[in-house]
Length: 124
Image (cartoon, rainbow, N blue to C red; front, side, top):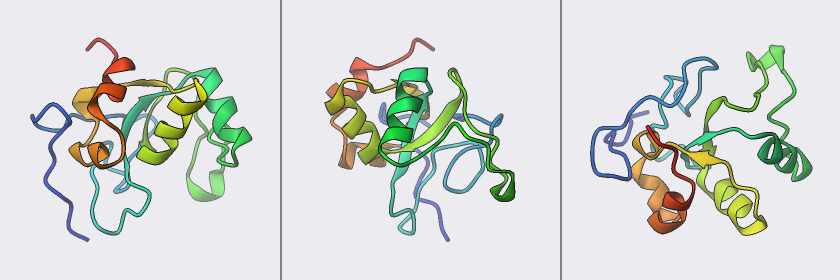
């Protein structure tokens, strides 16, 4: 699988999202993507308790460890490459997490408008 060029939504080089826990479609710590990434794991989100509860409620439990998949479970404050559509859904429901724009892949803009992402931007 060949990665798409690594640019962020601000037009500069994509920055790492998280290496502890390790995230990303390629499990390289960045929200890199490619044609095979059907979920568009492109939004570098900073987890909150509210978002983790919402994600579990809609069927994607990100807080429970799954050692058989090498997944430690996420906690508030953890960075994670989130599916762009899940982020937009959380925004629509009023519980979107914060976003690191420097680590959010430009392909997220195919699903989430930049103005929406900016509402949740963390200071870097």
